[in-house]
Amino acid sequence: MLVVMRSSATDCEVRAVCEQVEKLNLNAHLMRAASRTLIAVTGAKGALQALAFEQLAGVDEIVLVNKPYQLASREANPAGTTITVPGTTAVFGSPELVIMAGPCAVESKEQTFAIAERVAAQGAQILRGGAFKPRTSPYSFQGLGLEGLKILAEARERYGLAIVTEALDHEMVPVVEEYADIVQIGSRNMQNFSLLKRAGRARKPVLLKRGMSATLEEFLTAAEYILSEGNSQVILCERGVRTFNDHSRNTLDLNLIPMVKRLSHLPIIVDPSHGTGNSASVTPLARAAVAAGCDGLIVEVHNDPAHALSDGDQSLNFAQFDEMMQQLRRIAPALDRRVPQPQPATVGTIAQ
Ligand code: PEP
Ligand code: MN
Image (cartoon, rainbow, N blue to C red):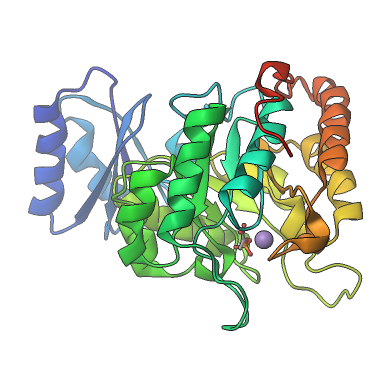
């Protein structure tokens, strides 16, 4: 059950609802979003208990949600959630798509700056790059760690990009939150519940990637973990699932986009890099993702893909990234969406 408070509701009225929840031996999960305050009441046995809340001051409506996720459900915010990224023009869930681009892993300052410069020049608002890498083999490059975070932060200052980077476990959230603008939770961690809960107490938006064999219900219920801890800023990301096919690393499930739009109010972006595993397929699938109605993309781009320390096969080189952006600019208007315009002013500050 969701108790939706009026936008004018006072803290005192919100507290009174939470006290009523406790009195009935139920549990309250408070979520304050920009547009409204919601209290998810769990443990309720049925519609009858709604009566105990309807008459309380400041309550707008009671919504009964019969799903394992409530705060993530469309009913919690039928108008759709938008998430702004301070310091940039990026607004997830707005008509303008959010483009996140950058290397799989931060390898060096030179590499990161060269890529940041190019993706910023093409209009990307957010720089991606792993400082802590979840690698299948313990012998593969694990990332630069804290040094990687510092390089990303420097790139933010220099190129005016926001930063998204991954936290691998709950203990890592505070340091990632300190340096990054968006905390990424990777596919392998979609059901790492202690990480989800800690991210739910972070003050930054969370990019939640779909587990590689997660159903939509499991995906939205993972988002619920973050929301139920009070963080209303969750961005979903489809990045492909494991199937029997052997022609791509994963199968990018674009079916998910319209279903997420129906069942949830959260913005959803697509990762065509991990979704395909090969650079030749990235742009076609990015086009398809935009056509299917995604709110943005996260794409791996490298200045020298052949020598990348991770995921070079699926990284676009600069010319391919430029071409992808140009193509998306032609497709987006057909869906009443926009792709950010190039920012040529940022070009040419770094020698490559
Ligand atoms: C990544 O984006 O760096 C990454 C590791 O992706 P995923 O968690 O989707 O495998
Ligand atoms: Mn990668």
